[in-house]
Structure formats: structure tokens, C-alpha cells
Length: 231
Ligand code: SAM
Image (cartoon, rainbow, N blue to C red; front, side, top):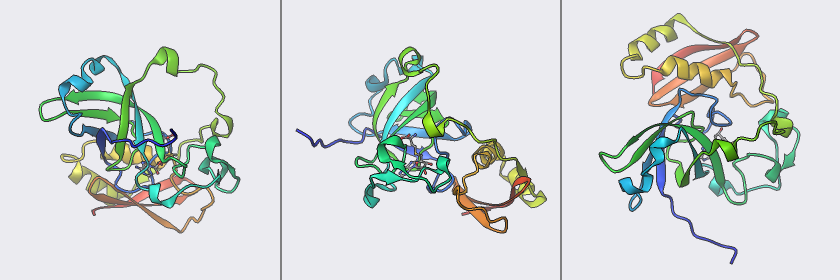
């Protein structure tokens, strides 16, 4: 048998409301907290009994935002500048024969008062992502010391991030409702979400975080956030 029907066990509520600017792997933006809300009939406290003893989780999920676009045998990883091609199975591309992703996230808390929800940190997930499975991360087996990460081995230097006075004023106004926003924006833009092959200093970029639109430009010194508005 080569075909299975899988059922989502949970759904992600994430600050990332669109694909653009989501970090390319988990753990790169620790301030990006998300809620993994278990769906019926899996939303019983029994299903997560003992999970509180683990610091990290594996989430197996569906790339629901791109699943309808199919897959290609080769892809152009951003790590290679967006031009060179590798095989889809030599990549972490979302455009896969089975649109399944895998992310390790930090477990911040478990709420079993109303259904079951897991608060996690460092997620690289789009809002609404269906989760197929949740497994505890086992450091003794899952962490491979000295592993070779091929073309994805070298982390780029983080991009410096600054805020204009206007953006800074907006951050202060939003602080009561969005206490970690400044740090989150810093972490997201430090990854330089611009496509590797785009390098136009005059270009204005925008992303949606929570219920907000964030706009920035890049010059030789780094990214400058100049606008933060309600979406
Ligand atoms: N860590 C996962 C993996 O290795 O399978 C995902 C890696 S993938 C390169 C990360 C990108 O997937 C993010 O930058 C975001 O653009 C995209 N993404 C995250 N959640 C998604 C979803 N539900 N549907 C489509 N794309 C998604």
C-alpha cells in the first residue's frame, strides 16, 4: 500500500500571517511564539500527559500554504542565492511530492484548561498550519554532533536592524499589547528575508506580523524599519 490518508491532530496559531519573511528554519527567531491547538478528538489532556518533561518538540506538519502548487524535481534554495538548483530531496523546500514539513520548537507551556494547547517558541510556521504529529525531541538521539549540513552549513551574518523615530514611537504605543514586537522584528529581519537574488536598495519591503503591517528598506548598513501599522 503506497497511499495513506492522514488527519491533522492540531492547528498552529502563529504571528506569521503570510509566507514572506517567515524564518527558513525553526529556532532562528526565538521571540516568535506560536500556539499548537489540538483538534478533536485529540484535544484531551491524556494525549499530552508527560510532555511537560521535555524542553523541545518535533512538529510534523503540512505546507498548506503551498500544497496546491505541486512539486518539482529540482528547486533553488535561498542558501545558494536563489539561482543554483538542487534535488528536491536535497532541500527543505515547501514544494515537495508530499508537502510535509518538520520543525523542532521549544516547549514553553501546556494549557489543558480549555481543550489542549501547547505554547511553543521559535516556530517557522505560517498561521493555520495543520499539524500531523507531535513528538518529544530526544537530544541523545536527535542531536548529531559534527553533522555536515552541505550547502546550508554556513549561517550568514545577521543583518543589523534599526528603527526610525516614527517606527520607534509606534513600538512604544504597541508595547502593552505586543510586548516582544521589537525583538521579534529584529530577529526576523536579521535573517534578511529578501530573496537572495533581489538586491535593490530603493525597494520597500513589507510583512505581516500578528495584526500589523511592518515596512522596511535595506541599505549597506542594514535594514531600517520605517512603518508599523495595523493591517
Ligand atoms: N523546518 C521545516 C522543514 O525543514 O521542513 C520548514 C522549512 S521551510 C524551508 C520554511 C519555510 O516554509 C518558511 O520560511 C515559510 O515560508 C514556509 N512555510 C511555513 N509554514 C508553511 C505552511 N503552512 N505552508 C507553506 N509554507 C510554509
